[in-house]
Image 1: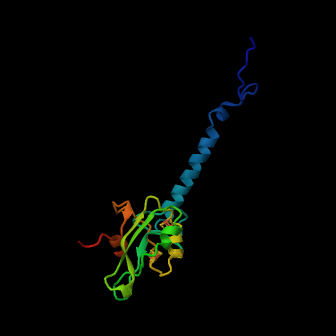
Image 2 (image 1 turned 90 degrees about the horizontal axis):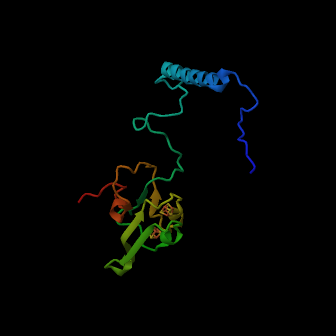
Image 3 (image 1 turned 180 degrees about the vertical axis):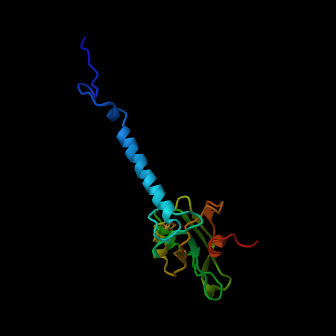
Length: 169
Ligand code: SF4
Ligand code: SF4
């Protein structure tokens, strides 16, 4: 039977003790941490501080104007819904997370409106395709990134029309 000898990376080489316990590396790491701590304490809370972290939620990071956050359904100046329930957003959503059920206004000249409009936000990938596809500029993505205050997994029509706030009942 062939015996396989275990190979150790340290085999045949005697490293000094301080290298075997990584003493210098540990001290270097602690020195670096201490340097940053002292520097950040000395410059806090001035704008000269070099920390890249922020004290969220007291401090908020400024997002790019192109940021795509919470969705919002827009209204016409008279308060009516801009959405005409054409379902182009549904067709273009790569996550298949939009559901629209159209219905007709009693006045036929007004066309359709979304009786149900829902976005399953747990499946949304915030690509913005729904916004791009909309021929009526009826949906937009706001700069709001915080959605933890809502217990909803599905943003429904009234929630989206109320700027992502629970509509008054
Ligand atoms: S942002 Fe993208 S994934 Fe989310 S609802 Fe719109 S099209 Fe669908
Ligand atoms: S949001 Fe725009 S694309 Fe989607 S159903 Fe309404 S009008 Fe059509």
